Each structure stands twice: as structure tokens, then as C-alpha cells.
Image 1 (cartoon, rainbow, N blue to C red):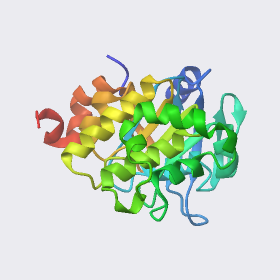
Image 2: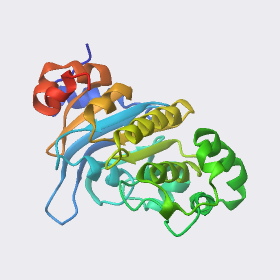
Image 3: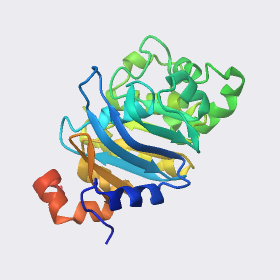
Length: 262
């Protein structure tokens, strides 16, 4: 069984540094927050290897979404570093990160409601408009319903359908890493399942995925590795399967839901 001990000691930091070597995306000892002197992240570490699906779970207020936003340049990092394929991208602007190969899907306000599905996807390649046809075909293979309804305005879609448009738009720039912030939040159980299926499908198409998710049990079922974030630090990390079955993680973070078949 993989190590699920709490992080923070020198030996655990050494283990992170060793394991993160060669990762497509890595974050080391991040301290960050929204206000000066008020930190939400307090030394968070993360790495994601090529074509890996990494899940981030934890209690409300743990800093999960803040971590994702810090990776994408939306929250200023006070100390620590973020690297993409060995290049330091700490505190780079979001538009620069998109051009370098990071896609980001926020939890809310993630589509242009007055635009059609096709126009939303066109916005995804605003920096490279000549690549639209090729990327539209790729996204259409993942989300065929988007092709069939390309002329429909995004504002008329259901929450789950909007999520598919948002994910599709983020894929238009051919990212090497896709960041998903609570993609199943507010969706019906059926659409939640569809989001998880599509997330795994995107990952199997060759895109590394880092996903923050409130549905911890389902997230751990599909991810290769998981992090449990607590108070802005990594409390536990291991394979998704090991975290889902670890008694301490179940007791402290998953509750009875993790042990149920629902």
C-alpha cells in the first residue's frame, strides 16, 4: 500500500521532490492567498505526470480551489514554485499559461451564455484561430453532442451540458494539462457520472488532468493518484484506490459515504 502519512517532515519533502522529478506539472511548497498576510495555502505540494489523472479532495476551506487558481496564475503565490515541463511558471499570467499548454475550467461562469456552442469553442483558440478546424474535430470526437448542436446558444443548455462546453473550450488549445475545479458541482447524479466518464476519456486521449472535486468517493475511483488537502497543506497522498480504502482517510475526510455502495 502506498504511503498515506501526513506530509510536512523533511523525509516526506524529500520523497515529494524525488517523485516529482520529470513531472509535466509540479508545485513545490506553495504559500498563497487572496489578501496580503492571509494565506490559504501553507506549503502545499503537488505533481502530475504525463497522461496522469490526479484528484484533490478535502474539507471545505482546505484550499483546494485556491491551489488550482494558484497553478493557473489567478491567485498570487507568495513563496514556492510552479513548473510546467521544467519551466518555472510561478505567477505567470493566465493567458501566457494557456499558450504554454495549461487549460483551466472554473467551477462557475465557465461559458459565454450569449454565444453558440461553436462560438464558445472558437473563443478557445482565440490565440491560434487557424487551428480551429483541427481542434474542433478532436473535441467533437470527445463530445459528439456539441457538434450536433453547435448552433445552439450556451445559455440555453443544462448545467451538465455547459460543463461539457467549458471542458471542450479548454481543450481547444491542445493543453498538456487540464485543470478542473469541481466539475460535478451542482449537477444531477446522472450528469455527475457523465462528467466523470468524460474526464477519464479526456485523460485517456493523452491529456494530463488535475481535478478538484467535492464528490471525494467518485473522484478517488477514477484518479490515478490523489491528494487530501487540509488547512492548505497535503495531509495524505497515495493512489486513488489506497486513499479510498485507508481507514484514517475514511474517518477524517470521507465519512460513511466512502464505505457505502451508493
